[in-house]
Image (cartoon, rainbow, N blue to C red; front, side, top):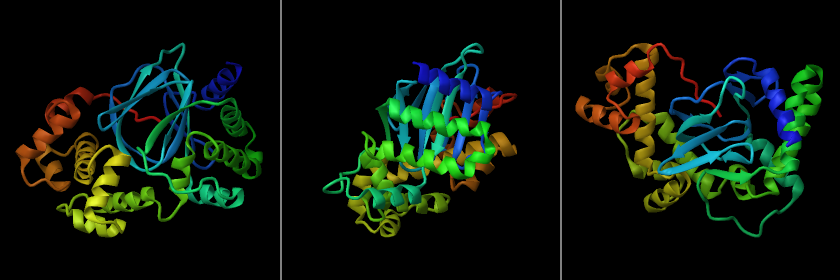
Length: 299
């Protein structure tokens, strides 16, 4: 309990206002929210998320992950998710530290540590929860505490980050971390497919082209893609299209028809139907709900 309170105090110090705050430590962000949030749709990059106070739920496909200080969340590839802070008050704000995962650092540590498994595990979902351990929490505290001594960051931050990765590689998250770094793992093959979809999501979809990019057969890609993302490649493309369209409407004041066309929809009625299905309201009503707000997607 003392460790959790120590981490909460550090996050509160370096995230004095609501929002997601970049820090002087590469890949490290601190997050604060003083009230529960609306469900926010976004692309969650590979990261470790540790909550020190409050609670959050993240929805991936039809799976709901609810976590607080007792668990940490590890995301092993870019995933379109819906996140919502569900426990936060001005007196006890939601406080979270988020460390983006560096495949090169994971790979280097694996080479030093030697073989950690007899064979490559079958890929599971690219988002998992694990019980928080005292050793991992201690390493997270030491990394975050370096924000108070910027001169020490260049030397000591890589050591603390390395320990965090080591704790993950030797814990329940080991299989996911290994697959992030192994070039020809099933996860990396799916990740190549995701990269193609992200670059070309406006274009008509071809599973065969995406499968060739992933160096898999179309049937194998469909199977493994769904295993790690909880959705098909086509559903993944659709989520990217709709999230970008929503951003265009909210941030750039596009009308619904032009936003839909810009992300690849030829039919305004189809765009409106699929937008409503994902966001719970057609574009105009959805925009009205968010006017005057500053929605925050947090880790």
